[in-house]
Length: 227
Image (cartoon, rainbow, N blue to C red; front, side, top):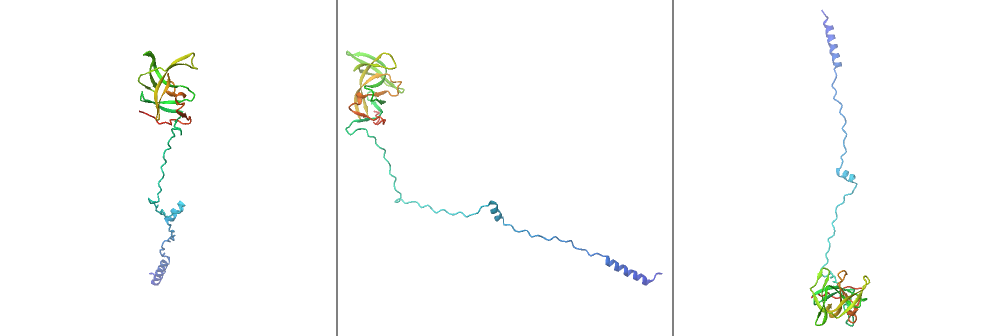
């Protein structure tokens, strides 16, 4: 039989040993929390854009002038052409409108200070005799306009020598009534085919010698007559 004292001693020593070897649980180490800085989104946006934000300013209200303060703009009147000289002569430009009352048509005319007799564009010219005198019938044709047939007595016959052709041409000279501006008069015209030229009429010195002066720097000084 064992000694009870020895057994008790052994039991006590074993309990002490167990107490000394029992581990106390240790809580896991917690990582320190780092506070994140608070960032202002608006300041970051401003910094990113690199621009300063300014408040819009209001424009001052425009003050409209009153009717009394508004000055009327003077309307310039068109300058009226001088159509006559101080002594009453007609002023003609290098080109003028010529109205033929017998045909009720206006034609463009070239005013030629180097030509003696006036000329008119005539086609289908036929000369004939009436009451023992020479007559001629013709039509005026130019710029796709062909007039009715005209019959006029022949004042005289002239011979025209052209530089582009050999020999001479016999042409009839007739007297016709015309109107330029407010001037109505009769003048001689040589009948010639002018359909290849720019103007159906040519006014020579025999017409404007005593009744008009020519200013070649102007055109269409006189008003166009249509009826």
